[in-house]
Length: 362
Ligand code: OGA
Ligand code: NI
Image 1 (cartoon, protein in one colour):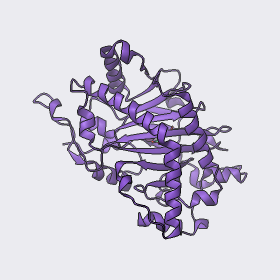
Image 2 (spheres, helix red, strand yellow; image 1 turned 45 degrees about the vertical axis):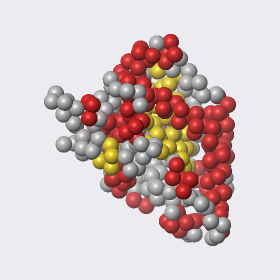
Image 3 (cartoon, protein in one colour; image 1 turned 180 degrees about the vertical axis):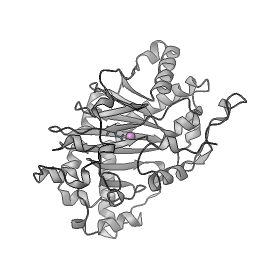
């Protein structure tokens, strides 16, 4: 918390203000810091068009649960990413969230800069790229990130100093804005986690139990049009470090998933969610479910918005391969690690690239 407050008082004129602000000021060529070296750019011949990433129909859950579990398990093992349709979350909930998030990004830059921080474990963060002060090549996006955890109940917000009050107000604003969206997405993640547990041949509450008092981080990514889209990336290739990621996007497209050396486009499906397996589910399932690497391309003429819910274990959960999956033929592929330690490593050591390849393997 102290570092968050310190940021409120920082000299904002020396901090990067984000790519939306650059474009709002009429930028016509991207600054050098956004130009990726050729080895990091998206190479056209490694992109495979027209391959269908699995689509999971949640309606099947009611009609044939066993088949649903099999399909979900196959998608999570072969791809680690899929789209979810007929999920039952009202379109109005998603649209309300999108409008609210756009309002956040449309705040005057001075207002957004009050929440600017490179700290990752703060209740609310506005930032651009990932950690600009440590990056040689920045990512072409801005984001707001907000924690939803039971720990929040432990923060009685003091009235003074004034900046605290302002933060408390802003947190309350974000919470109200997101509350029905977050509870709907939480419910969807619980349904998927139960089915994923069953797919491992285990009780439906097995994965949820391993997560403990789970935590949700909501991150909204704003990708403005980019004057030189071939030279930049909206987001570098990475795996997500938590449990399960549930993403809602507009119809612009640009998200790609990697299999081997090739990248596959995720074609937007209206009102669907994109779900991907993250590192901790790969570890718990002892490698059966795959934490897939993904990245985002930018567009020359369109703004893209994504709203990403990271459904993560409690920071004090120890995550290792589930003992029920381990025997002589199936030795553990990963060590058990405190989740907090894993994410601290991710944010301090593995700033680029694929985390799950760097998971500790016995
Ligand atoms: C992320 C992410 C993809 C997107 O925030 O981790 O992968 O489409 N986002 O914004
Ligand atoms: Ni991601």
